[in-house]
Image (tube, rainbow, N blue to C red; front, side, top):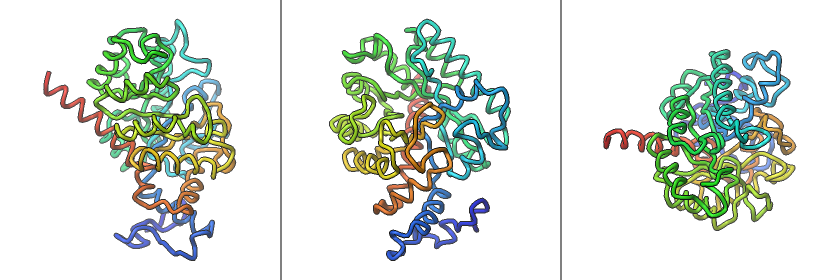
Length: 353
């Protein structure tokens, strides 16, 4: 059956069990590569690791994400055009962790997430587990995962962590606190990570110091995310990871979600692809993912200006010879694996209780 939105054959129509069309004479044909990219993404949609949309919408007097909203980088039509299946909505604040109001600001943004989703029931669905992500996709909705949020939102309280999880938080960034600083995790920080494992909150170490990253990788029983990190070997941005940390992340089966930002990866699609190549080669194909970082205030590479443009990136990776199996992990499989692992740990903890 054809993709009704693009008029593009699905993988099944192209030949079930045979993978995507692989004409060697079309390897450098941009049109053919884009067709292949759409077909692959129809089967393996994008799991976008970071979106600043909730904060961006706070400043609009009126919006309709299902009809389309030109004032932001992300709406339902563009996510469907880009084959986005699940997106992590950041609860970060543009000015930083939030100081004395970090907890209140995070609660306000969680409320904003629910308000936006409830206003767009035909396009969006709030999810908290890997199974709910699949259900949302099967119903034609984009699954929305709340998080990451700043660790300062906990106000040094495991009770607040549990409340935030009950309200939907799924990812916590381990930076901006005394217990996750230059010296790594304190004893309380280690207790936070253990409790996150128990209740199903994923650790995000993007922007964390090397000592915190290393200790979190060693301690966490569930895979760790880097929701906005590229390769420091290619671009020396403070949030990008050195090769030794990429290697450790791969060994721990975590996921480095490469951001589509000119500052961290470069000004072109090929620059982004260079980072994806590097992370795959250093950490392994099971360790690489995508982070649109749309509506976060970042400047994006050319041809990757909004959430509809993922097929152009996948076409570039196809041109470079990425296998369908590797691309399916990049776009969808690695994030689903991490969510399933966290869900399993929660069930195991409940059985022990």
